[in-house]
Image (cartoon, rainbow, N blue to C red; front, side):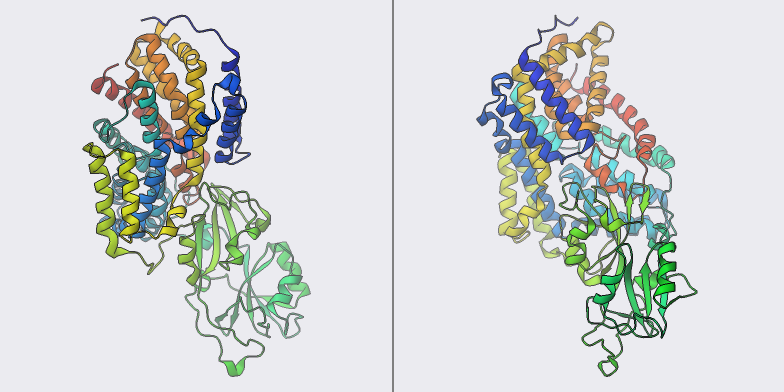
Length: 623
């Protein structure tokens, strides 16, 4: 059927398009956080109500929207499962199965990331698995780069197994219910989801892993991996040094801002640096981070001699630490005690309060007593003036930290510790209860006993009363930037439908029906959604494009539900960039990837899945 005549352009359409273009620009440039952009869109829609037709009540309706609240509840349920160490148990079994076989490692990662993502939010799943997979790779003599992109991709295709796999599915279901009166059931698209998952898994196992470069060597330690050899130097304090007898605090005040004393060794044993009264002695060894030209000036002016060896990683990892000289030989080191320190990588996730802050202004030094050594931003390693750099989402920080703060950092929602923490305390006794609660939520919603919103909130209450989560942990479990993004953009989708903007764009897309069959138009719409997701985010794409998909179907006499499904699957399939989907960004730094690595690996997968998905929709639901 040929498309009908396009509707006339109105002032309301122009205003909505202008707001949308502003949002696109802010999303793409990331000048402000995505949640702030969403709130800006929300305010603009309400202020311009005469044109957008969005009243104050409709504007704030996104915060009470059932999909938004359900997404919030699912974040909490995912956090409850993570507190029990369930994912880490799976990781241990994964490591035992995989050994040093890269193919088995890859199969394990795909299974452990993909299948749980069908019932738990995939972003927390990936965050929990990054340290597990990184350690698995190093212990199995495999480059972490070979496993971390598959970790992200597997979680994305696994999220399409059920309604609650991703926030994208829940939002699409809500919009479909509003426009078509047809929300998704729990297993509405599980059949197609299984096909997509198996296709994606097969691609990663037999094709994709060959396209992933080894950006990080399997055999390198962290110092070599971050190329710290020319920035970390061990120097010895000579008897004529002006530093002898001075305290740590006094020395730190005189050193240039780009020089840091990382560690003090006395008789080959570490002296605890937090004691600012500790005095430097003749013969002390200082491990200093400084660029070569700065180090030369320090050596010539401060009475230091460079040790004739490279800094061994075992020293910074605390392997040679022991108790410091006893109190009878204090020499100004009263109160100094042993405190083991280690090298560790920290990932800055989306929504972290550290984003946009200088490292010196974060709790990294103030609360956790870490020394920042280097920053990896994608494949770039940054060493100079790093304390003054503004941190960005996806950054991976190499720090030297006390081992007794690792668990505290791991519990900080603003950080992801990229290595497994030994002896971390999990609520393992609550594991059966947590899993039972999640399965009950799925079962009650699937059988129609309870609405998914009611079931999910009931699961949250059960986790608190069952002791799986403490009440004060609920707020840290929620990714508030995602919640505000959803709440802010839902009214924009409503404005598209109310002003006729969706019908206008739908009519334009429908023009392709003059040259393509309906199946071809559906594929075009899948591609448009996938490309939009790379700029706007998955949730934003669904909010904007589901109304347009429904309008397109109406114009060409096609099945509108088929277009809803195409948008839903395409919005969860941004494999070509690290910024369009949160899980891609989470592995960007730890894998040492370049931006183009995602295109190299993800573009063929995107093409394959676009064909498989569109054919699957046509076969199972008709077009």
